[in-house]
Amino acid sequence: MSTQVNSKKVLIKNAAKQLFFHFGLSKTSMEDIAKQCNLAKPSIYYYYPNKESIFEEIVVDEARTFINKVSAKIPSDFSAKDKIIFFYRTYFSDLKKYAKKLEHLPEILYKNYPHGRPITEKITTFLKANLEPLINQGIQDGSLSVSDQEQTIAAITMMTDFLNIDWILRNNEQEMDKVFDRVIEIIFYVYFFSLK
Image 1 (cartoon, rainbow, N blue to C red):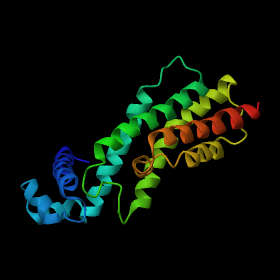
Image 2 (image 1 turned 60 degrees about the vertical axis):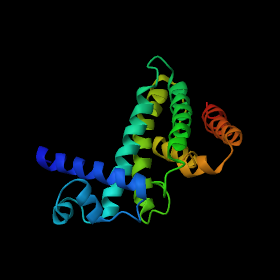
Image 3 (image 1 turned 90 degrees about the vertical axis):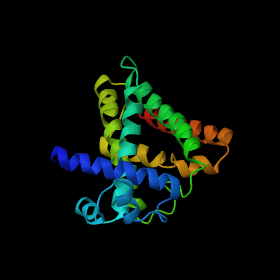
Image 4 (image 1 turned 135 degrees about the vertical axis):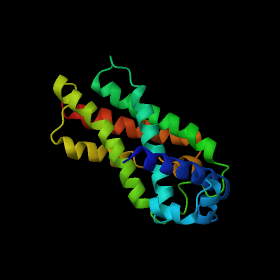
């Protein structure tokens, strides 16, 4: 992608993000986005077919950045098991903080989105990509016993699929923490270490 195309897309996404956060997805039009970034409406359509595609790209970018920041916090001297647990504990903790920032916005970015599944699948792909090297390390150093790496990664990701902003905003923090701790216990202490 050329630098000019990339900079236009960044301009459009930044303008759209401000509008989505202020007015919500349904009350923001392509015309609003064009006005916000001082471009003609047809220029917006050159880069994005509709506002939903802009929205999806914003959410995916946010998720990628969020997950990468969580991964960057993992201490390099931890064992594979401890890295995986640290990753999910940090992911959960940071997601709770992020959810609190979003809870008062109109039509929060995750709510009532008509194409939610493709976004969720992309976010799951980022999670799996961050989990895979940790599982590999555990297999190599013998701290994890895994019969099928791909299925194990899919299972862990599925078991932690509830870790989303909607679930966090709907539940009491103490109960969430108990559920999360139980899931971590099941995944890592019951599953992995019963295989050894």
